[in-house]
Every structure is written in C-alpha cells, then in structure tokens.
Length: 345
Image (tube, rainbow, N blue to C red; front, side):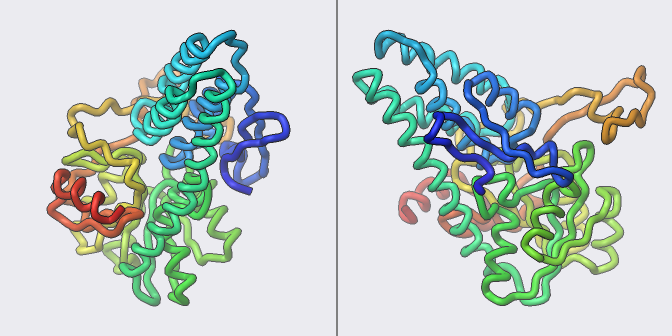
C-alpha cells in the first residue's frame, strides 16, 4: 500500500505507522484532524513529500468532517485545521505547501458540497503527483550513478518518506531498474533511528543490498574508500542551505573532505525561494528521545539534552540537487532556477 492514502469508504486518512517499524506493519486510520496532527507530530507519518500530502489530506479531512452550516463557516473550520496542522512540524516546508495548496483550492468553492469536493480532489491529485515526481527524480538521478556504485544515505528518503518510490532511494531504485548493480550504506540516524528501522527495512523488502552503520562511522567508511556517492533527501531548501535530518551537515563535510559527491534529491515543493538559512526555525524535539532507546532508559533523566531534528548544509557542500524537472548544478542561483522550471514545465 501507499505510505499515506485516502479511504473513500469511511472518509479517513490511512497511513503506515512508521514508529512501529520494523517489528510491526501497522496501518492507522485518522478520522479527524486531531488524530492526523498527532500522527504527524509523533512521526507516525514523516518525510517531506509524505508530509506535504498529509497536510493536503488534513484539509480535505477537515472539510469532510466539518458540521459547518455554510461555506464561510466551513472555510473558518479549514483555516483552524490548517493552524493545527502547521503547528506540528515547523521546519518541513512541504507540510505548509500541501496545506496551503488545498486551502487555495477550497477558496474556489461556492458551496459546502463544492468545497468538500474540491479539497478531496486536490489532495488525491497531490498524492498521485508525488508518486510521479519521485519516479521523475529517480529517472534524472540514476544518470549520476554508475554500475557497481555504493551509495551512502542518511535518515529515510525512500518510499516511506513519500507516498511511494522515494527521493534519494528512488534514485537507487531507478538505477537498479536500469540494471545497475547498486549497494547502499544506511546510517542508523540517531536518535530515532529512521535509517536502521525504516531505510534498512524497506531496502530489504525490495531485496536491495544494504549495510547498516552507526552515524559515527561515516568518516571511517569514506576514508576507507567504501562510498562512491552520497544521496540524501531534504525537508527545506533555501537560497544558501539545505535543511535535512540532523547529521546531514556533518555528512556533507566528511564527503567533501574525501572527494565523495554529495547529492540532494527533493521535489520542487521543497524549495523555499523567499528565505535564507537564518530565517528558518529548526524544530527541537523532546529531550526524552535522547534519554530512552526502545523504551529503556540510556541516560540520567536529570541530564540536560539538546535535540534538534534538522541541520543546515551550506550550498557549497552540495554537488547537485536532483528534482523532478532535472538536475541542478552549482551555482544554485534561485532566480535562474525559477526561470528554468518554467521552461521545464
């Protein structure tokens, strides 16, 4: 099944609970905005593209479950739902993009029935588009991989971080479809281990060779010549930096030191053309994520803990950005990118 989808039978959002992987494959059904917001905040659904679709489905869900008596009241309900959803993850721009896109569509409706129809139609369209975008990213990006390459990746930018296929791992899958022999090294990605729990799991599901390492091993494996390329996803791309899971910046420095190409794979919705790194709020998560592991206490409860979810990788550390429209190379001049995308579309 898709990572996140709409259930027409009972007008709910269904998603794979990623906090249960790899032990269990549990499907959650979110019947109201509150349940979906909790699923987003607790990382039951995660990954920039998936969050964009979750935001879109969240507005559609709010429309379907609203008891508003008129279009104006319904739009107020949708605005309220948007604020709840936007408050869950402040760094990932796709979430805001998905919410605003479906809200904009809702504004075109002139009746309750139209608003409900327009929001659900647009959210479903976004989900289908995400799958196509990931395949397009893979199609462009596979040209950067050679037969026999070993690709190192961080966190999870696979189908579990999207509706399907994946961004960084979509590039790997597309290369394998071209009969290229590709192996993957997955960083565990502390503190919540999305690499070991999710990336390793989904690659094994697809019978793609994968080796798991701790985050602190990246310098060793690159110095040893065990890595040919690095491909990561992105949660927000601004003019001077790429925001991605904490540890990505360190990975980019080590890759640059050892001459390993560092690639970012992300859809165009991840670009935030109006901001620079200094403008972005980095989400800080509960310190308990560092003090417990698998339900077991691993640190003194009284110790102070710092737990940012993301970091900013400067553009000078990025060799290319792979999008659904094609591959972007330095210098990454945003005005030129805007113009290029107009041509590509």
